[in-house]
Length: 306
Image 1: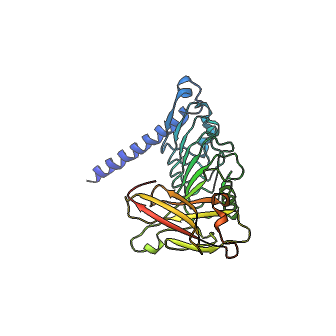
Image 2 (image 1 turned 45 degrees about the vertical axis):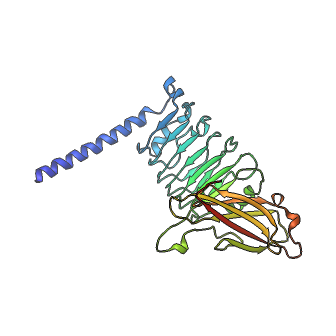
Image 3 (image 1 turned 60 degrees about the vertical axis):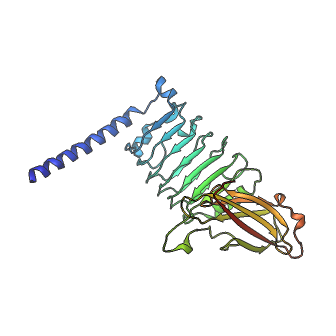
């Protein structure tokens, strides 16, 4: 029996050493992708390949000029390998569960989706400076996230960001979010997370605590402030798993019930989102100026999407 255990342990060590050698061989194989096959490569998956800080310094992805999808999940680098930011054809970048990754300072201009789920050390990300596409960013599980840069200005056509509301978001980030959302005509949305437990149903949704008005239920009333340009609206819908529908938001004059605005807010009643509604989108002439009270009403329609 002891002999068998020693043999098994030796086999495991050998297998582990083989995996490490394969990873090392792969890393040394990548540094200068100048051949024709690298220039025409469309998809590259390097999951759990042992990329460390030293490896990323020696690997340049700039030669993968036709790359459209890149998966670097579960690697050990602290920053992305060089050259990724200039990949003009890259549409999908996946870096899930890269536990050491601290920041992403540069993203390609044509990127459509960034999946950084579970990057527990991530502190900040920068949107493409001259983004040509509406970008989706998944930042769930990034508990140390402080800031998402590049929201200001009109260089980005729009973005949809999924993130955890309990992360350590800075005041500067929150200000950037509101300012960016207020640039009407751009497809900005933020999807925030829900925390579902059967024992704590009252804690199902976690709406960011920096909203001026918060409430539970299907309606929320409040007085319009003296200086008013629009509303940043957050919606969290609770439903059974697997049951889909649409959530419709109405904004109306509380005193007379006249509707000021109506829109379908999300594709699934299980979704949470934040978006901006400008004053110009509402029928503002129907608001009673001396009272200034409006009401938001949310309706959910199960079984069909709008």
